[in-house]
Image (cartoon, rainbow, N blue to C red):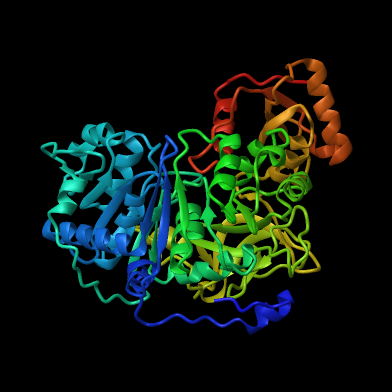
Length: 551
């Protein structure tokens, strides 16, 4: 959607949305390329290193067969199809099939436990589920709690299992001819459950147009993607909006091959090897992945890297990571920002927009983003407020599934014109937006409002620190005190002296009022399946009286 430009302001001013009235994600990312004879769509790398390529024609035939299987089971337009799979071809096929059949796909993390799966599948009323042998025991344990789930299809199975069917056998018996349902751009297409900061997760319902709404952000942060020879990979799970709509589906929309590789546990050296071995030119690497890859010694000496674009999002990047990215990849990491309900609305593009450390960039063309107060009124530059997006944006969700109250609470301002992201930020005098933190992650200490991201970036620059998470904990004098939970780098040994050194490091490099008064050395940090630090869990552990050492 973006036309190449040499100036951000000109690009933003000239942009116009082109959203057709009738549009179907499945047809867009698969059938039109297959019909045009386009080649490779997916490059699947197995755990043993075996490589299997799948063409757009392969995806069309397989998704047609699956759409026929779903229809034969009695599913129809609007029915929900759960997809509990890692990065593998069947994941893409299941989404494409559901969309072409006019159904609603529901991506689910393979790391979810029984209760998490039961809640999501039950809340959306899923009628079908596509999963694998590894996840089957969890489904068996909860299937009595899911009376509406009438079809379970399992990959890697040679025979049916009684209450579930082998996916390969079902596809082999179905026709590879299917007429896609004629859907409107505003028709429901996908439900993605938010991780939530309080209460149960909410299902963000998106229309088919959501893919088109993502395109400017993908194209901007990947330096006017696509370019000849591009090939995309991300370690982010395709069950996350960042993996599904920032990488997989936009790449297929543009006919760009996607490398699929499941890491049971992220291995930074293996990530470098994958990028080099399979000619990856574009990558979305969450900040945690970048921090882990930064610990690999001299990667350029062992891996031939030839990347064209590198983007990141989900946590704020600091100057240390930006400098490391330039030295290793020869690229500036383009940070972007968004959330499940309204994604890729802010970003960087270093070729036309100078990247400012600590900033997440400027509004992506096509999106109107502001910093507003509690009443939904835009505030002056430099003032911290809620990051908000003007209603009517094509990437914006239709609403929370079966939760009109939560949907209504998401909007503020005259005529409810601004969607509140739930994140705090500020805009500087040059129009750059700076992420401060989640509403519930912001620390209030001695009258100061302190965002954890900046302190975490500062801590990461200390040579003894591998990973760090910062939270606010109750303090009778300051309301809250800053606490740092730190995973030490290899070779570093916990000690009171090291704690004092780290505290002084923050005092010197950041601010005296922001240094962590409490430092706790931990073996690991609780993270979501997509690599985001779960600060809420750290706060709960502290409240429960888990270990935390006072200086």
